[in-house]
Length: 389
Image (cartoon, rainbow, N blue to C red; front, side):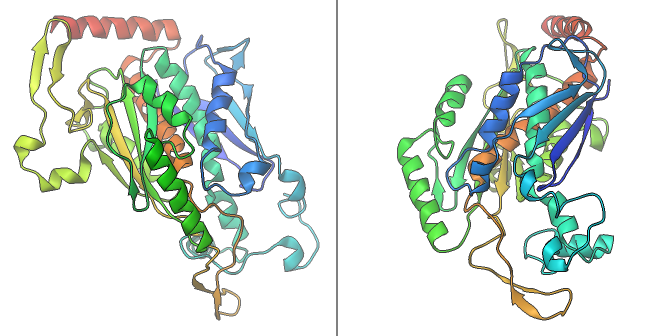
């Protein structure tokens, strides 16, 4: 079974749409839990005015009946409540009017897709690029990931995330259990465990915003309950850690990814990097540590999967950078649109959901069937095989 999805829609369009193909039949979907995940993405200290305008909820318009998946493609829609203000500008039909009335964009913003997309697709109105390249698209990717989360939860796989750093402020390490981590970070304005760090991060974001600037940071996702053997060592495109890395790098504004201790492994001797193998009758084979973040040879090793991503500062600044007008080729100070001073807490939520999707995809590749009951039988047989090895 192959699990895949496509999304469509623009940041100021009427809706974002996703089609999920490959979900088994008879999976119970919790609609409240799905929309809870969307609400999580919109929270976080440093977000802009748009989060007050839009309250995202997902509607399922295909592939689910009476709360159960049918095996057909699942269609998701996230409507844009601000669409009423953009109906003329974003109309699919030709409209009359001046460039100003159409809100044509001819001044590319540094750090955005504007100029590259305009050159590549030969578009003289850069709005045709920025509308799709906007991080608004992550709303529907969170909805898709929320469905994947519910599939994984059926098999005891749990996911939580946290913010590790915002700018120069780093959160201290902790040893909270996963469920407690999820509960505590959900109550935090910046998705950290430590209240003192939360206050420092808020003050730092306020300072950056007052300077007309923006700030990025580092976020982490932890997945527990992942069985040994998802992914494969036999081909480059079947290595699950590689697929997760690609998914993380596809999130808007993400510029780096690491698994486990990641780049730190380049500074340490091998004895302080590799995880010793142990065995007990109760646990079977396991690792003494988890420096490699749950992966060896492109496959999960039964330890928690630990993924980190770094998000650059949002490039739309109230202290604009220099650019060049594509009409006149004259320099100008880049225009400002609605923006966040810091979207790192929201990025933590997006990270959780793209990782959830890749693990769910690998899980179905390994144990796939047409119904949830068939998958459960396949999974139990595999666990018995592991136990007897």
